[in-house]
Image 1 (cartoon, rainbow, N blue to C red):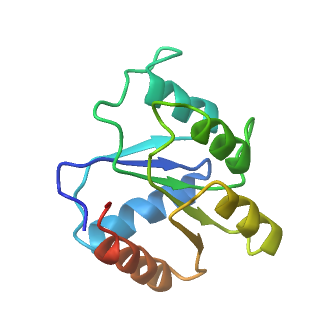
Image 2 (cartoon, rainbow, N blue to C red; image 1 turned 90 degrees about the vertical axis):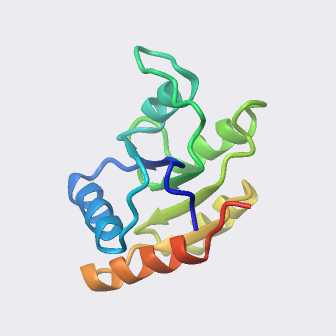
Length: 139
């Protein structure tokens, strides 16, 4: 379980999915600070303190990453993140609608901690988020 003061960075461009994650965290009584980036480029701005963004300090304890993003795909984000000496150790869970084996294999090439296909119902999604965060200790 994350410590309550550790932050989570959600990288997601879909407004409904952002609200679903927020609601699922709330329903699971996860009150960690949640930051949202709508693109991989915006996420790097937040992680590095570039492009007018304040740097997230300390870095997030967990990143929830969608693969289908505008401007920079989730896989491109992972490639750049793992190549960055200051950021390469960040913990990442892919949370995506893609059930494609090639996407899953590509994500695991970049040492993601887990790959979760977004369930279709809110109850299933809430349960999945609760399970992820209950058993994920960040170590």
